[in-house]
Image: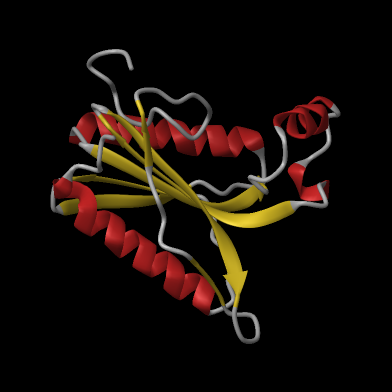
Length: 164
């Protein structure tokens, strides 16, 4: 199993700590991507926008900034919904094919999603958000899994020298 490169661990810990503090105040996590180099966070970019077109423009700006600054990593963090891992694959497939949003699934859970992107691949984590006293919330320590490639609007922020 491939572990997160040590030179990025402190930045990831800082981002997780900021997310915990934010949730502890009862706030929601917007989609934010952090670009940086080993030991030096360069910039944080909020990607939440009311319209998909505006969000696509923000994503393009992040990719351009990553290219011009030669960013070594992108760390994306967001709040979202996931399905309980105890659901069988057929149930999940049937639900996905129905066109319904996970928001409407009776077994949905609120999660924190974190993705580290480097030139060597992606480390991803999804951990459930839990309620504390009042509006405060928190999440368990993330467990990251490595993959060589990822697809979607919120991936591939770095210009990759080789294909994953």
